[in-house]
Image (cartoon, rainbow, N blue to C red; front, side):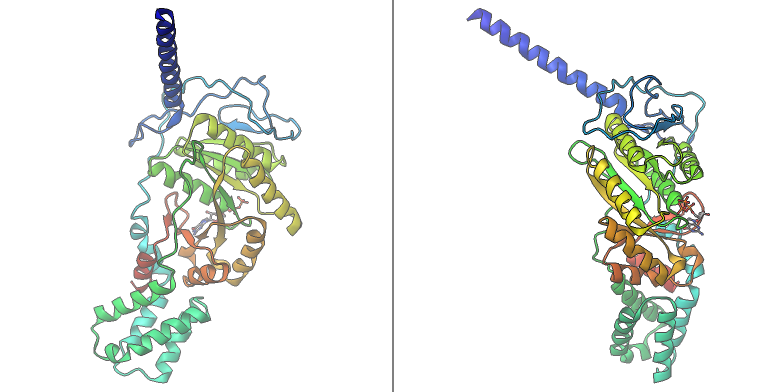
Length: 404
Ligand SMILES: Nc1nc2c(ncn2[C@@H]2O[C@H](COP(=O)(O)OP(=O)(O)OP(=O)(O)O)[C@@H](O)[C@H]2O)c(=O)[nH]1
């Protein structure tokens, strides 16, 4: 009996020690930017594994290893076990510390006010007239249509404003402004869920796939998203799965380096799915919060593009579920952008839209059109070329910025 008790005691001690060892290993590799503060030196995720260590793909952790020229390998079902050494601080490296994403749209509202001034001012000027004639209502309609808001939403706004025409006649400037903001907010889908799926899920990193045609601002957006996430205190790894153009991976790497985020890249022309797989595998090992994967948008055929995106998603999901698929659309392309978008929505289940270059178009109504025609919420908007010119989309703040 005594012997049995001693044996149980030893077993309990061994279990507790084992668990605490596991947890402490997790802590060393879990958060990559724990000590993020202005001007601090951050800890890199982890050094690259030795060059002779077998890798499942031709991808490398850029900045930490060398690029290999191996042919694309078959992606394995289960990741090889890699013993992660503790992360080491790299003295002398200073990273940017972006501000948190909350309130960004308010900070960037002047960009919108500038580009959308004709819409807001045009509408307010007409609404302020003493008695609105049919010509005035037509002018309002034309102003809304010119901003690319679409016929359905234009009709809704005009009808609702008409029912208030008695109120309009006596309203003060401030009341008119509020009325317009309300109507614009109503067509911007204020109840749509715009939460970004970036959080860890069942002990694995959140995975964000970013898709869209080249030139839409996809790579730039991936870089900006990394900053948004770092600003919100998350640890991130980037995957440069747009292997068509080496410059795209270089560009992404530069974005990552500025905020101390690792970029996993492959050789030019390599298998994008292999790079995506490697990025997510690295993220799983390093226990980061989010892996953001840039994908290629330029393929010779539509079916080729669909096959490739589908493969990237399938392969990634062997490691961790894809929690968000963001479609990047250039707001200046108007209806063309919506047509392009359909190709992508046929290839993968898009969960959110990023509308870029809204600072460069007077057609802010495209947000409404995209949401209504695609049935997908706009989650982020690009308002400039600066590193922090990307904001979570908030209908009310957007409407307020447009009305000015
Ligand atoms: N004004 C403005 N320019 C933007 C915005 N977003 C991206 N751009 C610019 O758009 C251009 C194209 O951006 P990229 O990120 O290279 O486009 P891409 O779709 O990734 O193209 P590839 O790198 O070839 O995959 C760059 O000059 C960006 O600076 C935005 O919100 N506003």
